[in-house]
Length: 394
Image (cartoon, rainbow, N blue to C red; front, side, top):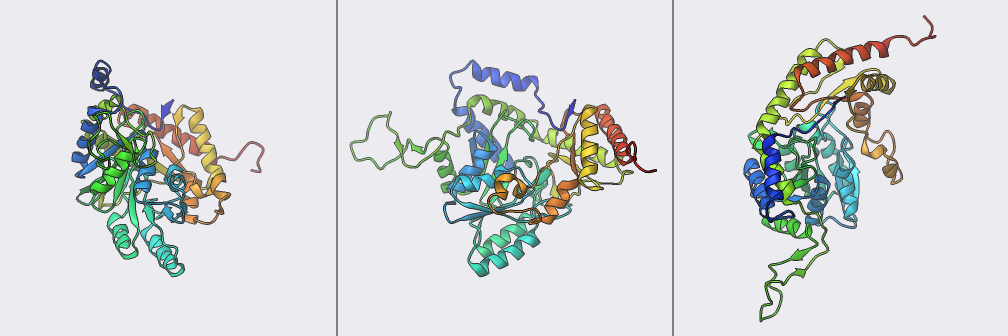
């Protein structure tokens, strides 16, 4: 089976992890701080907070920005459920903004129209969370401008986008956002096994997220009365969580970060090769904004002919060893969100995209021979899916 994504682990990655296992620190320690600084330096952000997952980073970002009961977060429906769930974790509510049909990212025109209507009824969002789908940045200057006009905070869900750029800014620089979140799941740009990180240029937000990831405990509090207690002293000043990253994970992350640019460049080469190999097929290929250098996390194609055509092609590819996937089932159509009042038809662009979407295998270690097999099996599957079924009228 050729998976749609796969981690790339080198001997240097293994050696880095073994070194930690032989040392004194296994849990959160100096290597976590080293990893945070390395990613902050790479992105050009002033600070970073490493955590146990991308979902944990989204949760802490919302908490640190004060999202709570009575507040609402807006995000795109074309994403994984954690982009929406993080608002509910905080006691807030969630709504969606439809996507741009070319980039499949949150549409800034749809966002502006929705903001205009929301302002009239006094229901503006506390946070807008654009999602950089497949590694391609949203139109962040436009969204940041709207944030200034309507007073919401911006959290970039850049789980797909480490290693990418928008204009002259690395994704994660927070030039156009309050916080940017990365994921280090094995299928992302680099991996720590599981893990995530929140980037920010606001020192107060960084301190808040760092405290909340570790039970809300502050070991440097000066609230206690003199004489000062011993070195064992700590104070819980907020209700926090155990969202810490381990030094084992961070060591893998530091090692992987050294190959990030090569990983992304390889993804670009493979994506360009797909573009060429698939140019004669009647399918939609991923559109790329010329202002963006995508991290190319996914290679999503769009089949014509609706959901039945997609199902036939998907099943045929899987049966022949091509581990395709679909990204994503629109969040608002999930049973949990239907029970909260959302319905089919609420966000038609995202729904139309989903009906024909299939993500082809794309990862740094994918060989050209494997890629050729993917293309050959896709062409064969499309021919079979378009052929009349047995017993149908001639």
